[in-house]
Image (cartoon, rainbow over all chains, first blue to last red; front, side, top):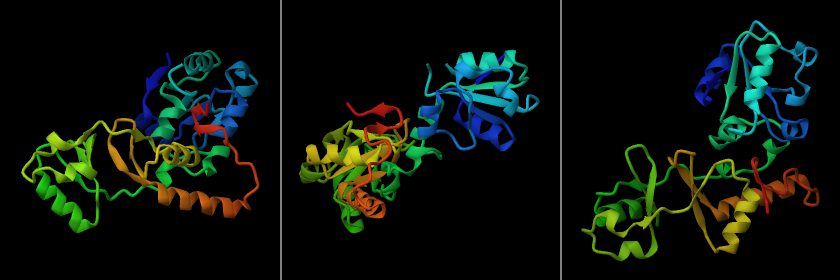
Length: 67
Length: 182
């Protein structure tokens, strides 16, 4: 079950090798995103697009805010 | 949206999935690093003066005034133990009896801005309202510093010269990452 985390936990997990995925459309990702984040928009999340990810390592996903 | 993305990632076989629910608006509001087209746009946090005089509610006005004068300041920010901004001393407030507790003469609830606010629309707003300085805080309301319009205008002028003046800036219609200008 996915776990909600805060900003401090994001930083700690990233230091330990977590992967960061922005789920917003590419236009919004191109404007501004977190360092090291890759862009996989929600509408394009599938077996092919997540081949970029190492499934054995933690993955953190985010969008703009609490939506 | 990030909730659905997290569940979808898990359904696709990712074993450890986390959701940063507050998202990138929270990240940038805390002045953490940004990548992308907007990263190069000057922001409030780039030009603040962080070494700002502060006092607490129970301080006496006269003592605070002398301390600020000695340091060359005409303003003092009233904070609590966590540096949360409660008020501001400036202008007429200094004319009260020196024995007056700060709490009785301070300006209550001054307007504050986040460090990720884009500088250009902020300066325009300050000009429109004839404001020379604004307080910058983190999202919890803790003091980060004071932004002076003069410093901001100089920073924007440097940016224009660097870009050659005529080029349209990325994010021109935005106030900050999350808020498009009306």
